[in-house]
Each structure stands twice: as C-alpha cells, then as structure tokens.
Image (cartoon, rainbow, N blue to C red; front, side):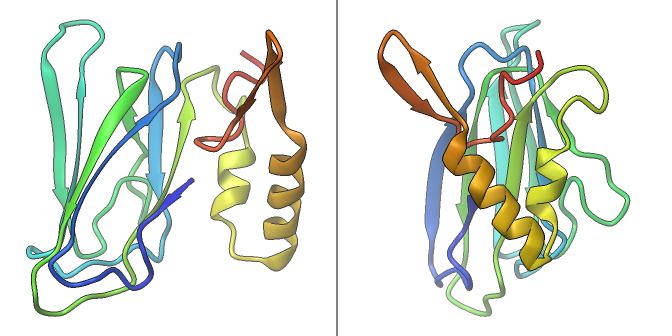
Length: 155
C-alpha cells in the first residue's frame, strides 16, 4: 500500500520507485477516495516492459479516474517494479491517492489487497495484524512485505 499525503501539498513533485523483486508482473489498484485536481494534479506510472524491453507509461491519471476504481480494472504492469510520478500545481488540492500493488498470480489467489481497500475499522485492524505477522526470513535477513503485502504468498 502506498499513500500520498492527505491532502497532498501544492507544487508537489513526487517520484518513487515501487518494486517487488522477482514478481512476474504487478497489479495496481487505487482506493475509491483517490481524488486530485482534474488535469492539473496528475499521476503517471512507468516501467520497463518485461517482454519488449521498452519503456511503458500509463497516465496521466487525475480527478477520480484511477485504475481499479469506478468499475475500471486494476492496471497490469508487466514488470517487477514501476516508477510513480505525481505532480501538483499551486492551486486547488484534494485528498490525494492511495494505491495497492500486488504480484500477479492465479485468479483470486490474494484477497488481502481487497481487504486493504476496505474502509471498515475491523478490516483495518485485521490488515495491520496480518502485516505485523507477515515477515519472510531469508538467510537471516527480515524482509517486510510493505508493498502488496501478500507478495510471494501462495505463488
């Protein structure tokens, strides 16, 4: 899960790389409350396509038109990482965005992302408890699963 500040600041220029090393691909869905100033405060995602090696870009997204909201399907990223770029102007600002990314797997394999998008306090507590318990130990190194949270589980 990844959030912008709520509300996001004026004149923001945010670039972040989100990755899940080794994933075949990623799905990205935004929270239904995601809202930016339409046409002025924009978000785009870019990545190097695994199959073609070409740089792909999706967006700009703004207003309330984000993947995974309002009957739009989640965005499929054919890579194990992507760069998020968000830019806002000096004028109006809104709530911002929240996204969840998870590794591609068999249909329905990970419902945790859906729980993370739920607004109820019960789901929020459940997700926080699961996140606190989900740790993968590899060679004595603890890896927190902050992005997508179910990554690698069940695949």
